[in-house]
Length: 422
Image (cartoon, rainbow, N blue to C red):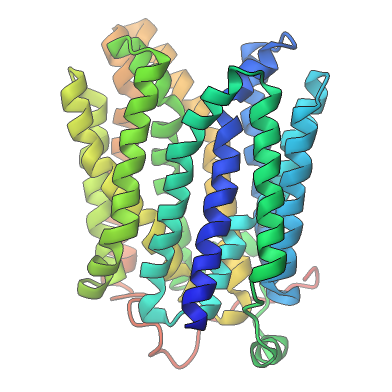
């Protein structure tokens, strides 16, 4: 019963947080343009948030291992609230950048939430619980952009104030309802643990070369790169290839979101009960390659919508199962920090993908024509996923057998190196 209440609380926290985030996300370019921002500055505005998240996510995740999930979640939500308020009352471009920087550096909610779930769920139920959080994430993104668009007709300040109000509600919810998941016994165990995940580039390098978790982090990065390329360039792709307007693109993205919610909310539990996580990662990587190839080559909208099915299903499975496997491939004392590193790698892909996608679309289009230009990001992503499938088979399925599929069985976890900076 306690676990169910905790998961309900976390579901609401994630849903409200992502609803607020997605309320203002589609409006940022228009808000920046009111201060005569260039296209480059608009792109930089997206990169600033992702870059700040790259630093903030592992930091907050690691601090939550030391000081508890609840206080760090409160800090993270408060930072988001400050960022939204600054955005609402910004009177210059630099204030918009500062607002996104503050929001990004405190955007460790997801890594902390994932660590919280790993505290309160048994390993066999963890992927299913991660899937429910993924569903909350998806629901927020389905509802938020449409609501933000409607509110923007009253002025750009209104969606920002609505997002700030949601963050205030979230702050109250966590303070009043969410219990700390690190019990005194768990704190004692973690304090005495020899494994410590440092917060540095060296720590990331070491993690990438560790057994079990290293290949999972590699998979997280390359899957994230391919999927972020799809997400970041999709609107421009749809405009150039099918001449879709903003409303039509919104409907297509909502369709993708619905598919992801169905996958993470209803399919994950059944899939993980039947198949090992390693095999789910491998099969979803292959399925993602098929979907991205369809995205690249679709000659009409109906075939594009068909290609979105394997893309969305595979993306939903991979987003859930990879982080579930990571949480079970390290000692409990470093779960938050390692999930933070995973979030940091994902943030890095969101810094790289928009520029890479735009470069491929522009340069290939100029050299080989419009269709080739719009296909180039999808072809590149497909190649990445085909290579990743080979990597997963070699380093996760064959070498590790079923990493983290039965995490309660190992007597010990792969040791992490300690660092004086920790």
